[in-house]
Length: 467
Image 1: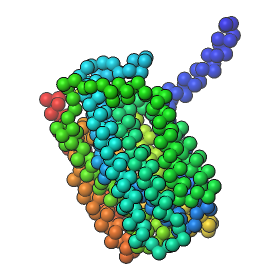
Image 2 (image 1 turned 120 degrees about the vertical axis):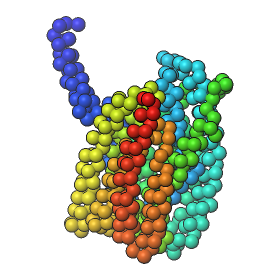
Image 3 (image 1 turned 135 degrees about the vertical axis):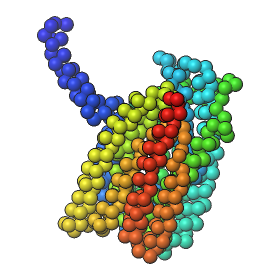
Image 4 (image 1 turned 90 degrees about the vertical axis):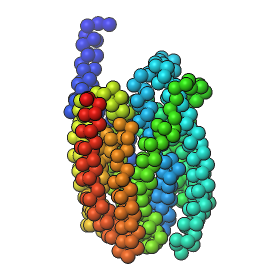
């Protein structure tokens, strides 16, 4: 190669490296965060497309059923019982002593490998049983709910709901595999896969909606997830999971009752409380105000909840690193990483809130036909402010749970029941405005208390170790 060619290549490569250094230094965007953000950017672009298709291809009543389907599926937290989060924390602590070789097999400390093996086998058994229970429970419970909630008779919902319940039960069986991979810090490939998977999922969902599949469209998207997941695991982590699932653990194993349960039951209670806090809005309005209002709430909530989903792109890839740093007692590095993530999440959330509200305001200002499918600007801004408070607590919760503890269980229960009560009572008598005001009021009370718990527990846990 000539000197001129080498100089030309150098000039082409150096700017790319410079951009990477700038992204990493000032915006803390490494490969996992990049794909996490790419995924969120895709969701930002795909979300409006999905909403437009639903608004144009679905009747207002059908839209209400579609979003109520999605909220009822969140009942899977009552089967999962927080085990996925526990797996990530425990796997990350064991992975601090392990690694993957060039053949894709796990190598390192024998005790850590044995404990990781036992953790994987416990998790897969739990989710196999949970998937069957979930399918049956959703099918029966949902059928009763829809049969007794609405007078709309021209919507074919029973067949699509039963199929969706079955597909969701199959999909939940794969959840422990993702938790194990994330806990083992395989976030480079995992986050790239999720980005590609969501592209396929949305594209096939759009085809189904546009093609007239109506409520069957929801099952199409879940089927795509299952197919993509199977291809990804068999292509990249076949040896990894064969080793963990077929190997017999040594005498050193993780015991569910002694180690996992103390943290799991607390997270389970927190997650179930989370269902009461975040997933009752649409079903309650469906029950008391009808499918049209429920559809408006469902579409608006999909926009509001995107604030947390996008902001979490910086947080989620760092959760296993939190656990690894804690396992090594590297608390200064932990705090440094934590605050860098926090400084990104806060301004990103504020910008997203402004953008979403301006979009809703302009749709109403120009009397767009689409405005009839979402909530008015006033309840939307109240909803968004409340959601920002919730998002601000995400890094704190992740920081605390990375210690393999769950000190927020009491506050989660209190918040869940307060929001559930306000949603049911105010939603019945004051419709949408009552729900959003109640949601904001509870979070203004709970979120500051979460920060107080974090400050107190952090001081106690770290001082005890250092002393």
